[in-house]
Image (tube, one colour):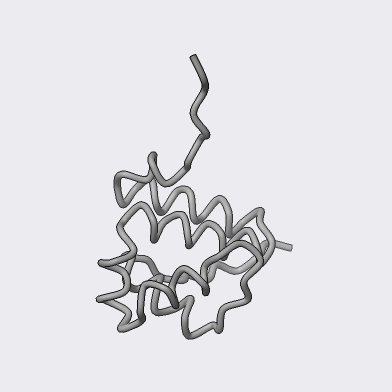
Length: 94
């Protein structure tokens, strides 16, 4: 009996889980990890749905959110809006 590869997208099944995951990555991750996390979230919701809501093609989304990709900020904002997220800034304590 083999083991299956863990896929975080399989566990992002609620808005709360998505927000918790993305906030954790935003707090601790670097640019590449954040893009990868947004890709996991898009996959969990469904690339077809995200493509429709962003006005982007599925191949463009996969390319923009692939490991090592450097998408434009506008693409990140479109995808965040499509997955029901937003960026929120809190002041950093001294």
